[in-house]
Image (spheres, rainbow, N blue to C red):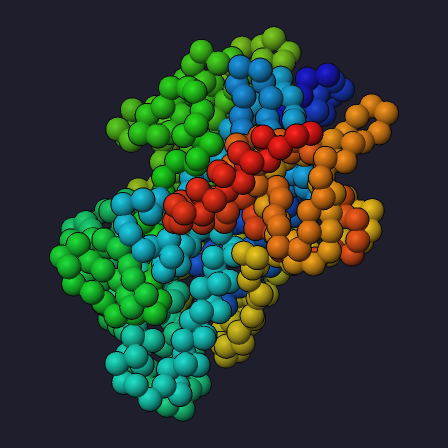
Length: 530
């Protein structure tokens, strides 16, 4: 049995699985597994329309299990990729045990992540715009600031609430700014004490013109249209950071705002950074067959791969149309590798690009033909609607667009509870908190009750010690990055507070004294008689 493992559930990963299913129908000895942190596929080109409510949020997502019915889906985070031993390690589920998945062929389609390393404060104060959760959070936030501005008496604070800043003049930034501008100006008419003229939408771009991927003529039309609709466009202006009060520019100027949207260039996925393979500008270098040089049986595509393109020094662009073609090439070559056939070289020229500008207008360049205005808007919608996977999604989106023309904007805020850093848990007598050999994902503080520390043996377990209210446990595996070295079992009714690994390490970094306390605690426990 040949096991093909795909990492990532974006265009590259999902379409690779879809093509593989078609190409391996007659091969009984092939198994396909896709690993992704969500169980759905997001149609990214339509994501900005979620901001304005033109499309219902669930209508641009597809269940991966329906798109790829013969593929095993593991809804887990990838923790490590061992290219030498051909093993993928994923995060724990309900049981804190790392999962090891062996593979014969590996497809890496992990995409990219937002990179805020050189811009202090953005991670804490800027809204990212990369996935469906980002779109929902931004929409809820915009409604929230409008609600606050309607009743705010402090004029300076009110102005900052009605100021919206978008950083990045590429496709994502321009489309987000256009949809955001349409929404806030339209929605503000529902608030008695807000004058739509007081709304400011500012688009920052470090280059000389927005939409540099398009021709100067088409980009100039987009700029004129956005300015006409009230968007302030600041060219040759770079975002340098952010604070709780607003956006900080490279010139030192600060724009007071409560809404900063960052569409800055993405950086490599952390797992890609850790891979021991040849890279170009942080992206995995592949050959003409999209296979890693010197690592047979491993392919990469999409945003995380550097694919040579004679037309571009930066390699193939990270667009959906390229990712879909790359997926077909990878699927073909994986199958050819299995059956002993000749691999296919990847070659694809862009068919064109389009950007929606909101309010039934767009710009596009399709096969060399330049379009703008309502005609480009119809072309944009038809192309992406036809590419939307699933007939049910096509119907839902079509109905959304039809109703959007007839009905007023929806300004309902859907509040979602955020997960707390501190998690309270309760265990009954005899229940196991975690077992020896489990993955160390949390540290625990006992609020009330008693637990016992056990060392597992073939014929039972030895009690090493007991811990009571005010004491903690589980820190050793996190501090030493190891598996649990003992089992913790409740003796009485026990209430604990747990802190996850990432938050625990952040506390250690910010509070050196805390690190010293845990170092001494571990040393004392190691030295204690067993």
